[in-house]
Length: 239
Image: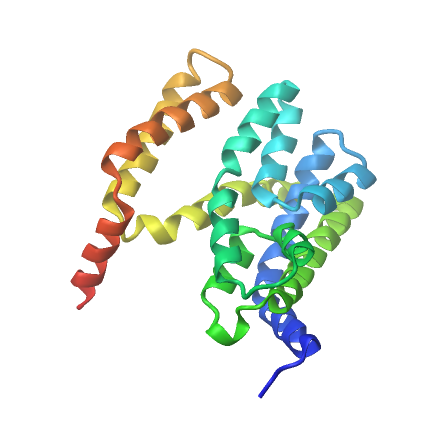
């Protein structure tokens, strides 16, 4: 039976609900960080609509408050978002053939969360309309929560604002944890990067320390992290 485009879109919208629930507190946390960095309500909300990348937005807002230069912020966020090249390729390869303009529209909404949902869905939902429904929900929630956070940031108790500030670290841990629990070499690489960044912060600005430690340890990781081999070992251990 052929499913209409509207029905496929609504399926994707329904699949976005769990992500929406997780986006709201992080969107508010980003808005608080952005407002503390001197962004207006309009700038805070527009950044969410234009960029739609939670970790990068929080990183950029934090770097603005630290007085980082534009070039430093561009390089840092570029490195942080390199994973999107791989995720976008996987999403587009999984997606059934569709017009290029629809693919370009869908590419705007590729995030860690939409990638995870779409690539784990059944083959019945491998179309662009499902993905557009998915990102309609996630993007709307992100922009709306950013706006709400920006508007009410000045009214929130200080203890709440400070506690939401750890959302960035929780976000990074959430991205890493699923892989680290089954991949010892990747865990070792993450620890190595953290140690390297801590040491470099003693000799250079923290923003540049992050860039150098990320590039250096990523280069080292190429030679000893084998994701496919670790995945097979994990699967064999579960059998």
